[in-house]
Image 1 (cartoon, rainbow, N blue to C red):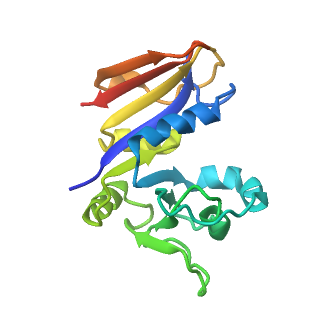
Image 2 (image 1 turned 135 degrees about the vertical axis):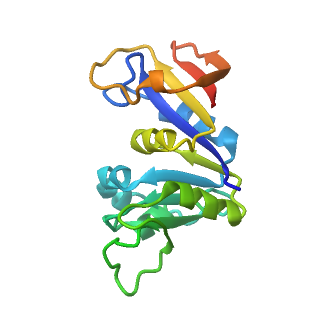
Length: 198
């Protein structure tokens, strides 16, 4: 049995996921409501912040925090120790595929290998469920889109910001069947909208 999978995104009125200011303190405070066992991100997200991650203060593991799982089919992430010690996560988990390039022989990061050329997210969730993981929170637009296409998302939560930035929307919402679960309006006009995915 796979875990309950929640996807969380901050978006503009026109569906963009970048090009506007996000209150990160509020974003992550809301994320804690799920008390996820695993936070799922992709390698591109880590690589975009890798310099900042390496320069950040090393606070060590957060024993009661979730595990950070990173989809890294090409073995591009090198800052595993820095990620582990940021103080947010209880551990890090590298999600690799069978054809992922070889890692250094002294690598100490836990690995989960699924799929052939690319990580098989459906199998990842099944294996995590067997290990007792109850809740996974997906935290990137690309993985949210991929998980939705694979019917792996149970709950979608959007922080909709009252701005229009142009560009491509994060997903073609006409292809989704959603059941409204609740909306909250913040003083700055941001809507926190929650949906169950049918």
